[in-house]
Length: 502
Length: 104
Image 1 (tube, each protein chain N blue to C red):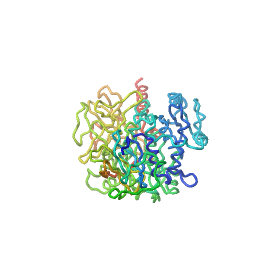
Image 2 (cartoon, rainbow over the protein chains, first blue to last red):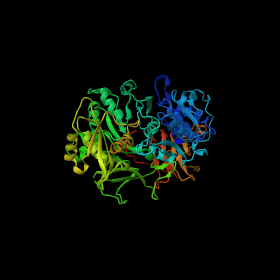
Image 3 (cartoon, rainbow over the protein chains, first blue to last red):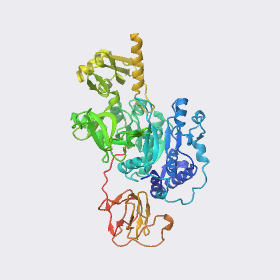
Image 4 (tube, one colour):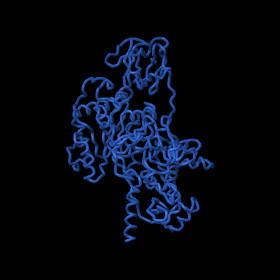
């Protein structure tokens, strides 16, 4: 199916229901449909809709108007430097470029603010166009959304999501109209992230009102949950960590919040346990997915979290750090370096297959002949089907011929009460091929000797996985959505070593 | 009477408030009814009278999916109503859906 059908469905099912905003700015399903068709009528001759800006209460109008007009929606990271930002926008010379008030002045191509575009829309939607599926503009195989990957291990790539991928996710993971009339979703992730796109589509599909934070700030997030009686929210781990810091040990007092999902990067177990303690009434959901998989493919639900916290069984307890179980419409295989599927409990490369698995960049499809997509994430599945993520294969350290996942060592370091952040990388080594180096950020006011941390890793893992060196830093570089920029850490350490050897 | 049905085709019951959208469809004309009557594909064509035929009521529920035995046709209810969908006079079956926790 095509995302234009979502507009039809919204108008049919949620005509009177508020889907965006609140109070005087509330937008019902029928008003959203009208805005989308009025917006689409301005897109004749346009090849794409680019959006460079922070969140906006009417952001979904941009994506859905692009879908209705049959052109891709391309949200770009407005926090990039001017040259990079304009470089991405220049890939779409015949696009409508929309931006927020601050970003618009930085764009060299013709661009207008989203507010100005909305206020200049024609007053009436074109009268009774053909039903959306008779429209020649609507081909399920067309590109619906282009997202630039964050590029933690390499340069950003343009990932393509076609209408059929996004609709397969919505139809497979969510029941249409399943949200209650009083439910509201607080969106804090930025528009250019797959989670931002998924937040928008999933909640409209469920009939859940969308409340947007223009950009994340922990106190504003807490205040908005209370003021808007927010029932659902999604955060990336850095946001969760900052919310926990802001609460400073006091319970959150957000009684309306029923579901808090987190994803986008590996969360620290210490932060997660603290969050569970401070938000005891919220159901926690860990969502794992990639840009290339059109959002979530595995979910650790509220019951899983409670069971893991309460259990004495180590197998159940450690599921707190798992990505949960794979969605029923997605197939998964864990394969070894030779491509052989490994049994439960053994680590390898994660392969996925299914209707939502796009696995495609502007440079071509990465799906193999049988439709499998190699995520380039390493992981393993336990005997009950819980998926554990060990990190990117590109980050794997090969020391003395042995594959070592940085995440395994990082989780031991992060469990130390003095440690706030940890990044384990492999540096070139004449004897071992690579040697292990850990960069550690301590919590404010804490101290710990490098040797104590090394002893801890040696005791819990073993000698071969013990970092040869531990470097203390005051901070680590992250993307805006909380992914550790290992590439930058590695560059800095490599140049440090080069200088040292000179 | 047959209707051309393809994914995305909207169906408005001619005899009740039920509205459906085709999620899966063979792309050929089929004998589909809602509430025992051939539905219309545009809301403007909806007649103002008519009633649900015996055996074809009972309530189509919001968000539920209805499939035929051969799994060739799947309709999703976008607006609830009394009338149920049927193919060649045989009621479609309610499809089982496993509820997933809201993740995003």
